[in-house]
Length: 221
Image (cartoon, rainbow, N blue to C red; front, side, top):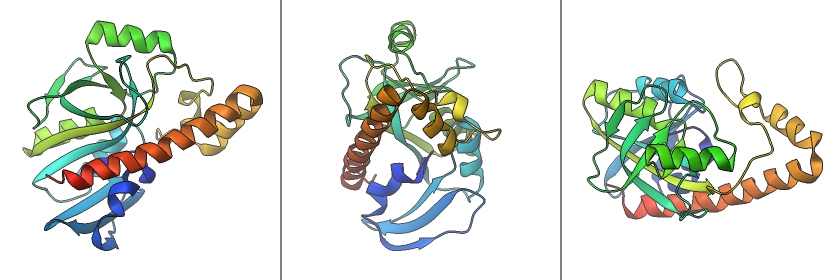
């Protein structure tokens, strides 16, 4: 399982037995067992390049799952909704990657945070995608290159109707990772809006982690 941040994997990781860290050139990696399967979990930061590097850091598995948080493009989706995708659309190239799940939603995957409600709604209408996120296309390309089954399972943290006042894109470093200090500074510049927004997103992330972990634990392929 590949995610951007460690906390996106935490709900599933808590269900594993025989957990142990794994030495690898990524920000986080550990393995464990669930229902007779060995799982390797890795997080390496946001965006397709870092996600692809996480896949490349390990030997060939029997399947790869892109998991984590996403934004809703479909107005019917709410925070903590789990979304299984049948296809990933790479925003920059238009390339499509089918998943091993026959039915589900279309995931739009690009290398930036979509921050305005107007852009989310435009993207939903023009692409037909239900959700948007940043890592799945990078993971999907690697899965296709090595010929293994690919899944994309995401959980919603922000709705199609919400704007973000904190500029997450400006807070990324040269490698593409989020700089927490810069995010905090962006929030402090407009504290009446920025601080409540970060607190809300943190609480939603906490709930989303639990919901996604519960789903993955019950459907561990």
